[in-house]
Length: 171
Image (cartoon, rainbow, N blue to C red; front, side):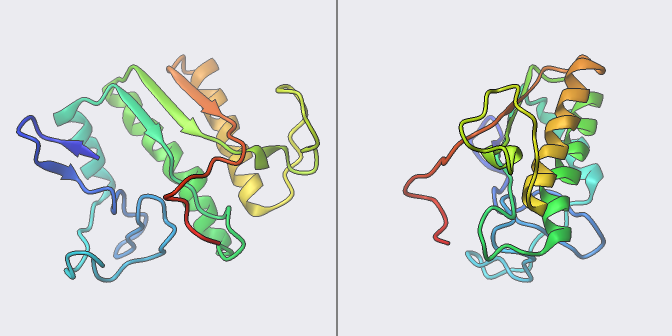
């Protein structure tokens, strides 16, 4: 969540980018398409992609943590949403960040990237995805590698294992 110098919120963590006219996703996309803000009971804002660019231009964030994910839970089966959340949104964000400059982009990858090769793999082990979620996370891993190696952007994919805690969504 971004704040103005006086502490007022600029981007509520509940919303981020619109993918298609009228389609709003929550930042983690765990709750799907929202028609009403469940806290404020108001219609959600529509944030066209240019809004992200305007926010970057105004606030110039330097360190970005991308923790968005959809598809890790057995009830999250909408394959289009999996790819939009895990791959398309991340590439869109990196393209926007490239225009404005930044110091670090840290992406929350997943141990699911290993897929069928998950029994104690080495960091350099082959990625053999075995679900839409794993394919999308592997794809974004490769996109981040591209942005780092070819575009020379300061990006990092952390392949996290069983990250959980008190705010974990129950399956």
